[in-house]
Length: 325
Image (cartoon, rainbow, N blue to C red; front, top):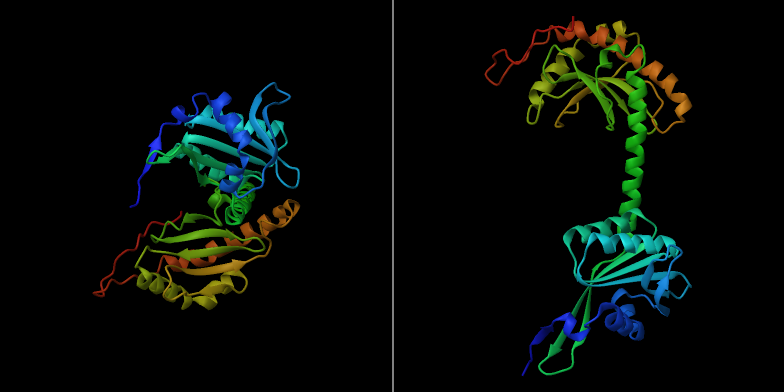
């Protein structure tokens, strides 16, 4: 016969958090060691920090690094989360363990974020007391959140992405303030790889700046929308038919990317220099980008006005004859 597990109220097992549960955990630290797969030794109770705060338990791992343990025989709250972080900092610990009766979703997310975003390791465990039939109650610690190499790797990637976003924002801010960037001067700098404005002649055709870690360009970007590749190709092909005239007006060769089967087509002037180059070189890169953009606009704009777009029935449509003035 198989017996059923019965949950026992925590306060029936440990009436007082500090005097009963924390003392019990100090004497049975191996239960926690097994739950987080860390060997915790040299455990001390009610350890005082320099700020007179009192940590429930402080232990060490096998390398001698401090492990902070905070207990809460109730639903997790912001106060204990703040204490956990404060104690970790005050004790110069590398690991923090938070044991709660009921972990709230926002605290689960917070510790997962801390594991990704910091060098410390954070554990969140749910504590229950169980018995089988008339057996004595036993602790059940369930790991809810813990560190992982995958999580740390994700955190490093996010940090790198955030750094790139801030670099691109500075790059675009300086570019649109350039005296020759008049066409884009009214745009709001962003964190993306491109900064663009509508051509004002054909919907879906824009004049974009684009930048990568090591390259930059001015481009005509043709994107009429999802599933509109046929119209993109019509516009591209009519411009490509004027390739010699456009490149002569531009004053050099351009890169023509038809990109059949893709969402967009592109005509670009590559100028070199990227947002990961030293910031002291950005001004020269912006000089080249704005010069290329102004020449590209002047070379392409007259031919955009002559573009004809045919729908599936061979009818004209989709052209806005408004000019840039």
